[in-house]
Length: 324
Image (cartoon, one colour):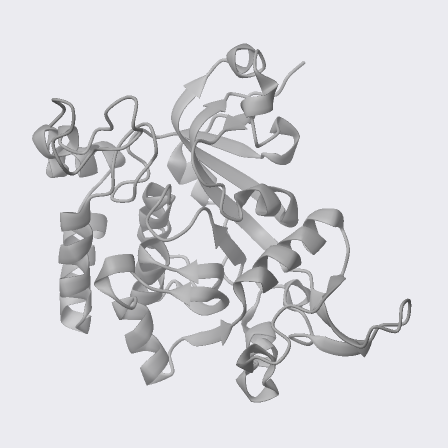
């Protein structure tokens, strides 16, 4: 008998343990698991080690003290500059950043997905990514709940033994305790369909010990399986599914709503100072009891102005062919 994996958001986030290595899906401000990030703050998780990037979702976790380290390739808020809380915590020494190449994340996640401890590559050879003075894996291993989730070395240089083609880099697998991925549609058993860029998600669903999907819509598995070529996430890799409409706000979720630029702009302005960040978290996270309350605070009118317009999948900025 098929297993129904639907749970409330609170129950899903409760599986995250202090010191876990956490991957939050997609990238920059597209299809981010924002509702889950807010719930992590409400539950007061501590000591988390983040993977891949530090954009809005991660910046909130860093600023509130939920996350202590990060291994990835991007710390920014797109048009609004560097992630303000992350930058502040790095400068004060409260947060450890271990920079990697973008391709290093992909290859590391692919290795973990395949059950391999590493892959061999020439990517980033000759760059400062390989400067041993910049490696922070030793420090991060000491912070992880399970040190073996972090490699003992950031990389190892090795001479190609098969073809004699010179030096290659052994890139260790990039493992995660928990991956949280926001999708457009998921079945009650965990099959999921993603529109738009997949980012690293199709690797980390196999590279993580536990996978939580938050979804705009939960639909029958039978509906998704009518057209299996459009499904990127198999039910066998998913542990829990949470139905949470607007769960990616203020990021964009293609086909549902566009990015809320004004909301992100206001966050960046507030988060540039510790007091401003705390004020923002109080207003938008801690003093809000539920996701429904969050949507009520945003207001139906504001949400409607973000809603995607077919056939674009987003909200056109300018009037085009009679569409405002």
